[in-house]
Length: 282
Length: 331
Image 1 (tube, chains in turn blue, purple):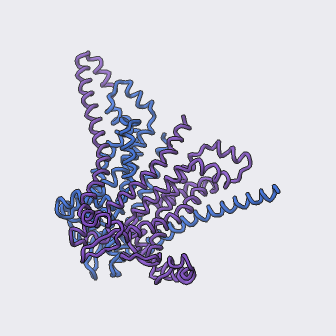
Image 2 (cartoon, chains in turn orange, blue):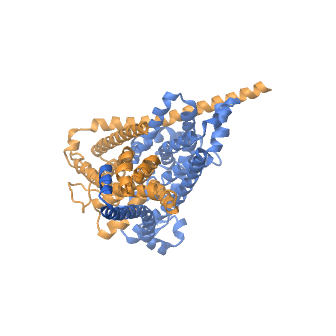
Image 3 (cartoon, chains in turn yellow, brown):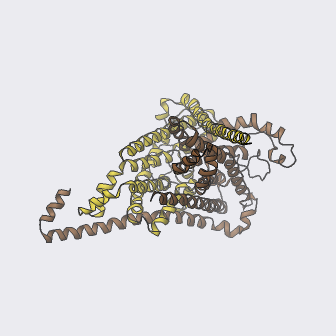
């Protein structure tokens, strides 16, 4: 009696172990397949002209220079807009409103903003800026991306400041240092690695973000650094070229996809390394 | 910097008090600035909701409630209804969750209880890398690699073997073109797995090891510990993680746009192309040639916002319940 019961329990356990292992292999299988596709299609298309020539019209030869520059300008601007605001908001949550109703509400809303579909951010900025200005522009694209960076920075700043031991705050305050100086000169230094990681992760996230740029920065076949005009950017160019019927455009799209993926993976690894160091320090 | 404070304190009461006043003002200013920035987060979400309601007002006013269940989508006659995109969004998200929930649970189980210790960190990192890949890459892979694969190998098999069944048959009938609800659902599932799996893994790790060890000590198997102890202990957070994944599946845009086929068809078959809210907006926004067309697309965005807001709010509330309990345990 008990032996059959035990046998059944053991079989269930083995079954569960096997299923769990298979599930993990299933998850890794797609990772490998997708990465391999990106590398095998993107690497052959990777040429020096990719970084020196403009996006071509159908049938002509070209690169993605204007798209790369546009992406860098808009992502950089988005990070510049959102990082100070995000750090300030995170500071408020962690240092001024830790157990207040307002703080809880804002934290909750920020968590929702963190996973709100990015296409909704695109529509929001379309209504906010593009419709008011009357045309698509790079600055609208940067603002849309900054709404994606913002919640990431708020979240990491909040969490990293909460990790700083209270004894550090208390000793600084006991010396008579005013709170804003405690925050700027003690707490920010203690949590610097974590906050930088948050910004890096946010940058990784927006470097491949397509949906919010479709209705804000749109695209531009030509070179421009004018923030008031539509601006080319890698994700939208990839989208357009991949959906087109031209082989050469496909190759360019793969090359762009390869560069973006490698950048995202690299940023992921760097931020992970930073976080690890942080854990060792604490 | 501390030295300067001491020096100031030595300088006498007058100087120190003017310094105090300065500090007080700076403190006040700083707290106001950070509070303003925090309120900006609140305003951003409210602003997003309001701007889409405003942008969609023409569509809501013209079509009324019929907008929700009309399957019209006619740019020429300017009649729009959201039924087809809503249906596509729900069906693809459902397929995604059917795939993602058991697989994520398996991965979390493997990473917390089964895998040898040296294997856990690299595999967890690899799964999280999958979460970081931009959705447009999933879309390209889907269009150029996965769609042909489905069209050649999976769709014909489904049509042949399941298409003739009495009840579920209509789900699997259709031309094997690869594009469609099933393909989109599978791609979404793959995209959601890393999110749900890493949340499940994290919440499984919050179970106090005393509880797990006591179970092992009375002779429980790994499966019994996970199913009867870990899962009930973390139930609310696991549901929260699943809802977070659902929120992502509902709003995912680019990958779905590539593989769904962009057809305003209401079809029972999962092999037929369809449309989702996000894909409709992404595909047609820059082509919208009349104000009512544009307004209908923004109204679709508003519907998506409302649905994802509810789903994400449930997710966060569920996740907070476990976090609260974990906090109590620590004290």
